Length: 253
Figure 1 (cartoon, rainbow, N blue to C red):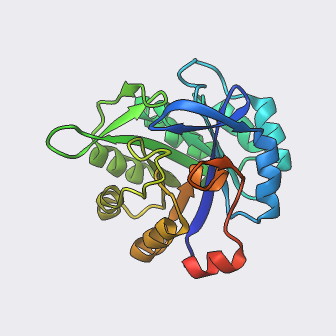
Figure 2 (cartoon, one colour):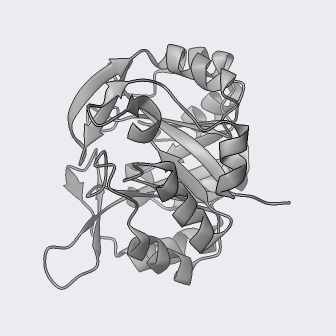
């Protein structure tokens, strides 16, 4: 039976694990390998790792880091950051990742999603869409390059194109809610759900298990991703890698 996935999302910068608020002020919170080891013990559903500066700094994916992470992971693992061509995506899958995540490269060239899918399988192609609320007139703008570059794509048009192409999944990431731990943008999720049937993962804003439960209760089978919730504890944000145990997860579905 299909069920929702609860997914820690780890942000990497200079090989270290960091957390941001609204895509700004990255705070070092530890070693990603150590985090993966703890998540292994906690039997997480899946893991997303994003190198937040690779594209902006025009770097290729760090294949050695990806290999180290994949070797350690005992859960499905998705990597994103700096992927620009089919060969890079193929190599990342060969190193042990189950999925590759595209962002700016997909916005620049949707055909790349098709090309990569033809080699590694469409189910392994994920497109991350970073969005920010428009200041006037409502709606959302799409950004890339770690929130620095505004795209000309309209959100509805992009999602419909990606569904037609047949990508395996989209991750909708709220820049406004990133790191705030104030809850998910439910209106954003509703907007996306109305126009597509492909798998969706939501990222940005989770501050408690109640936020996860509310999302699952409303949208049933959905990917629920979080960063701060799974690396911080308490109002002072002490670094503590955590994840709901089996009984807690069962109560969320």
